View 1 (cartoon, helix red, strand yellow):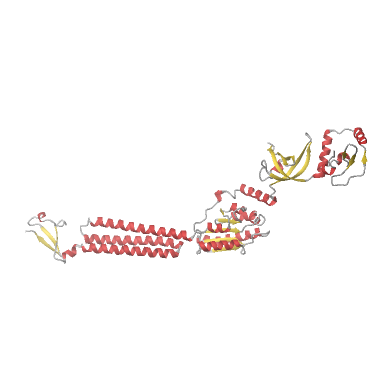
View 2: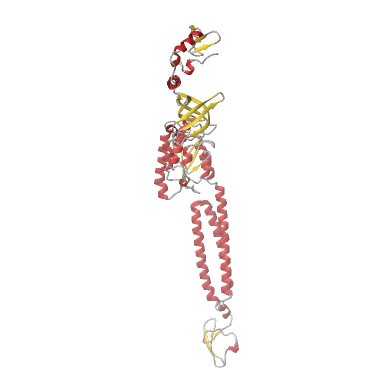
Length: 473
């Protein structure tokens, strides 16, 4: 049977640097499995007699001595293992077991260290801990006092990322209520990225294809390295000054894209810098974060109004395809044409109804003709106003739409002139010119029946060139 060497368990404080190696015949002194064995050999009987003559150890003193030996040999120590039987006491301290396939170790983590955790560990989590070995004197249990813990071996950068994310989230920087909708058709697109980045080419190609009429402003910046956060903040400040100078004055809607291609956590770290995150949160215009690829996440993704999976997707989010806008304008033109047609039909029906009630067709027709001209002018003015509104969105399409509306109005104008001609043909004055007369009683009523008058009744005859006073015989 072989005992464990002092370099592995730190028992030299008990045995004065000597540990027993025994078999049936002898015991030898050794320092560790990797140390050379000493030449000193002591008979077993002598060892038994020496132990028997020594004073006994008080339990507490022995435990403290063991604790001192372990501390001097191992501390500080880093251990990797799987969390089991995790529990948190009312005091805030946490207790759990760290284990692997070959052993397990009881652990304690005091509240001051627990408060620094990104999250509480769960059953089965693989963690890396740093702390110190100790013996819990009341029970004589070996335990590890954990001072720091990282999850899954993901390293310090991820720990910093999660801790900063939690702190900024607690301040409300990522609240959904802060998110602003993107403008449906921005008048300007602002891009913050590196001039040499492939992300800029992707964004430029997408914007050129979808909204070639919209100006794009690029504010260059470093996107990787230790100097990138300061450069990004400077570029964002320049973009904000440009917005305050031009967009606010002209009441233009603009959208800000912060883009970069994919990379490792270290490559994208500039977009996790607290200065950059806070600067982006202060943007006066809606923001889109298109940093990395689908699986990459940075803190700018959380603080931006919209997160895009890629730089190309970021450009697509703020640039609706031109074909869709053209189709929408075609639908609006068709709706406007139908409205004009319906309005014209209703006016014609009303004109027909009024014509049936006319007592003096010529005079009433003139009045209606004036009203129709006024309505036509109002309708034209309304169409022109609507066209001017659409002109600001797409001038080329507006010209085409105005031409169609003008043609439609001309066609209806010709129809109205034709109707006016037919009504003029019904003018009684034209009938009078053919030799007929209009007879009217003194009370202004038209005489349509001979039985309506008696001998001696005065009448007035309206001829083509004047009127004649008559007396019925």
